[in-house]
Image: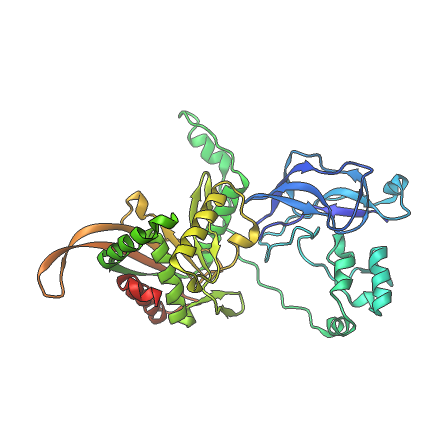
Length: 429
């Protein structure tokens, strides 16, 4: 029976995509792992790999087609012994609705957005011929294996990763409890708003995938995350002096540290100093992370990315600076891979370079907190000796998810960040 190749979910927020280019044509033989198409997601252009071996029998979605929903059939694959005549007997592809909130990114080699239940119809198990051969060699019960292929079809990767013990465990495992759906917000009446501005000159800008995703995720964040805000000011003069000294020594290596590099390091160390705050909300539990994986907001044309600096607490300032510059450059070119902007427990949004003194940032789920950083400004302050002096002061606001971090814990985390920034030399110890 011909296999439906479905539009995959290539990022955690993807609900639809553009089939940018086919790299195969009808009649071409493909093997598992071959790149067969390029698909534009809400974040980047990704390569899409075949899961099964076979021959491209029919292309259902032409290249250049936009707004193709996840799980919509885009092509038909013929297996060994099948011909184009078998396509007439194949069921007519019916586009499936995309999931409203993909729980996790699907890898490029997966042709279904989420794993299906074991592929059975009565006593029949749907599996590719190669998967059946491997299962027979390993003594596996196909009826107890969950298929990751189209419509739950069992493919080679499923049986290669399975074992007799795991199939037994699968049969005994209870079904996971369903997550209660989030109440949907009342939709905006676009036509009514358009009528309000009929008499005024304007340009209509259609939403691209990134803008749609930003709108959906931030609306979800503000509606479902109980934000609270903690504000502190930090004196930057010791850091600025230390930064100038380091940059003079690093000039021959072509390294120039920014204030943001110090902020990243300070936050990464603070998450180690206050480990209970290094956590994310996982629906029915809290996940407390061991490494400090810090996301940093990068503005690009039409939106933003939040690339993640993994193990930031273990890296030197120069290493963080180099990695951040590389991630920011590739983010602006939309060349980041999903694993480079997924994950992390904490984020930084710095608008100080635009002269913004302070602001409140929206938490990027599932993160537990985000630090909004303002500009460093010369201000009159009372010195340790009680006399009035001038210092460079920077305002910071920590937006916190109250489900993950309580007030006192958030205050402890922000205090640790301030201490690290006001004692920059200690961050190198």
